[in-house]
Image 1 (tube, helix red, strand yellow):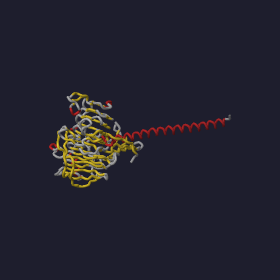
Image 2 (cartoon, helix red, strand yellow; image 1 turned 45 degrees about the horizontal axis):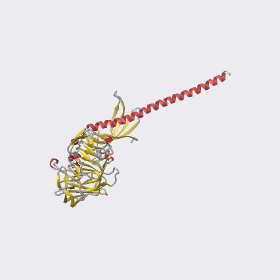
Image 3 (cartoon, one colour; image 1 turned 120 degrees about the vertical axis):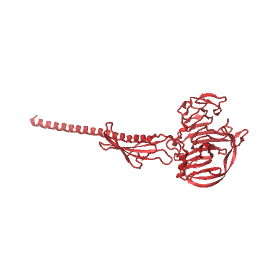
Image 4 (cartoon, one colour; image 1 turned 30 degrees about the vertical axis):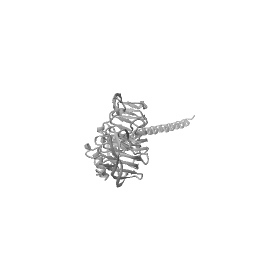
Length: 457
């Protein structure tokens, strides 16, 4: 080969090598930049999450401040520094306060890192846990008899006799307790915190942490003030109380009860008594939109029935609370127009919630029921020496929601039963976990509910 041929070959090889080397350099640079940009992408997400955690801390120290300490609406920007104090970026926050009667706070945080200006945004929801996270919550001993099926968590600060079917946890704060006549023991004897012939017993847990009923955030003054602001506060009626009939069109008729008829009934707490439970005459006071009114407050006995279309809470409590005991009667079906999470009803009584005698054979209640100082019960309407009513036994009771009472819930008496419901189904409304009825009592501390990355707004 001539020298000229060798020179050309060398030049070609040098050119190929240069191209390859250049490609490697470009590839390496691209990979390096990609790694750096990937790191920046991750850092932007980390900064955005830091904004969420910052405001979570802020709410823990000031639970009602939704303006980042400024007192004004806006976008709140904070620098984000590394441990050495160098500024790596910033997060900007947009806070959406709770809707009326809710505790759910929405936090949107956009993180931006300094090197490439990469932005990422996350949205998180925080809320104060509602009491309506249980199917049953009690502050006393309770007995679930045969024929009942409970769908959802059960918790009691007392002992639990479970002769029915449970599909979720059954928890008692007691390791053992003294079982008396209230849970079918005569003479009294020591039993496990949860015991009985039902089950599955693999879902029974005892002892569990006590629920502090004294610390439950039931503030009747706040509820009254909210109702007064909305013009849905009703003082002492001067008569027998108030009657509410929810209508399928999303409204509720509110009437003053002028006269009632009584039936005799028995309860463990009060013995045999006249129960003025049947509304015989009433005067319509007005028709109210459920969508526009998240709470109705009554300082008198209250009757509730109908078809609920919307979200609201009904409260019956009379001041001063320490000398009055105000009750709520459910004398007919009380159901949602649809069980799809968009409808919810809270029923909060200062004392007891009663299910009346003359209810349908298949009685259904859709609501979060809370008897703050008393019980949720249907009296014994077929007890020798007290009463003997043909309507004492009904076919089925269906509760969709939650049952919370300071004292035990009771709606069946005797075997068979002699008075009550032959079959009982209690199902938890899962929508209550994130969206309980308006103004329904909650704990004080915010808890994390959801976290999602979203497109930059």
